[in-house]
Image (cartoon, rainbow, N blue to C red; front, side, top):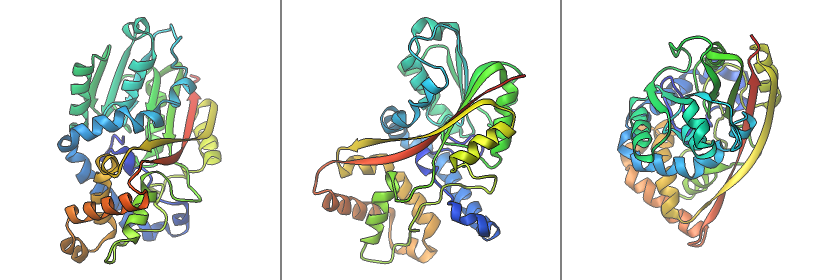
Length: 325
């Protein structure tokens, strides 16, 4: 999750490729998105159970494919010193603790950072209750961590580079703190020809509401005007230009089975507040409470999926590179 002002994995797809031609006109919208997200993340501790559940389930599935691409595998014996920036509720630390041998974990360390004190607090509690080995969480900015040079064997940023205001600074910071030969790994969302993930069901639910419920046809995929982190070819070239070697970028899809409308609301309900504050007028927000919106979305999902479970699908851009210094 973003280590600068906001951090929520589900809110990461945020500014589409179509905005490149009118980016100046989008500046106000991007600032509004930032402020809306910042408010959501500052209250993350109010939804601690949801953060932990999603980290253990759907977000774990998004994160797990990055580990082998970074050389973090179950047969690894070399010590690992991992810095996970924009860590959110600690999903990367969770997956590394789940994957690496105990002896490898004991010989290394994991530092999970996020700009949100609430999210860092959740991760710190998870470290204690779940018994993560040699793992620490602290507040830090991915763009300027204040950590020493040449310290880490691995640095990761999950679903953050299309949100962090200065993504190049975050990558350069990762390169600075990596040891020679160290590995950088990150993920972003690509553009889609069709709506996917949580947005697909929220879009049909809003379209079915008995009143005007504005929502764009496509959810934007980036929240700043620094590059095009939703285009795999651009990502590969750009990471090389920033100094990384052996850059590898690929798009990988997966899905998660949502058991019921109740589970969908539990996992993605916080997004409803985000999209209404982002795209609705003050009058519309005043006329329709969050509880009313949530109830209407729930009703629509029960009808749409005939009271059964269904799959939510996604694509993720996975990127890795090596530091040569």
